[in-house]
Amino acid sequence: MGITYQEERLKDILPEFTTLLEPHMAEINVLYRDGEELNPDFNRYFRMQEADVYVMMTCRKDGKLIGYIGFFVAPNLRFKNCLVAIEDLYYLRPENRHGRTGYKLFTESEKLLKKRNVNRVLLSCKTFQDHSRLFDHLGYEFYEKLFTKSL
Image (cartoon, rainbow, N blue to C red; front, top):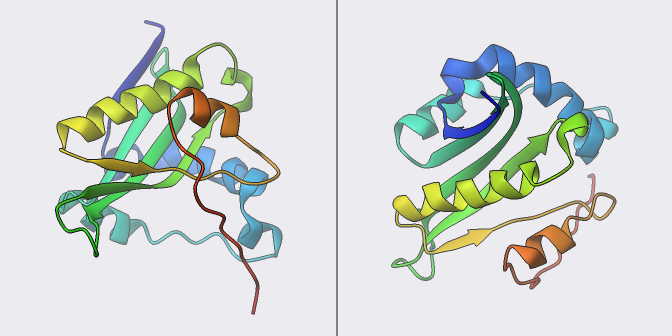
């Protein structure tokens, strides 16, 4: 069977997804590290997928969920003819972060987004988990810095 990549509905894979979300947030999320309770609004995600403004690509190994990438998809507010996909989150189990699995997760996502007529993709990564080399290799351009502060 091997590794497969496919679009999936979050409501159809929720139990599998939540088993990956906890270690994912523990690994990278500053809010989680600051003691915020992980409490996703899954119903909102479901509605967004129903409205076709949220897209999720999953990665499975022998049928088991090992990774995902999600995007918010909407026209840009200032350039309304430009359909933009803004990455919400991406994750691949640590034991599967070798070879081209992660690379293919992104390239397969791009194919899916292109079928949906997306013109531009925005990706981000953490400063302490820098994926710039991968994004450069995929043809992305570094153009913005993002800052965060707890109030």
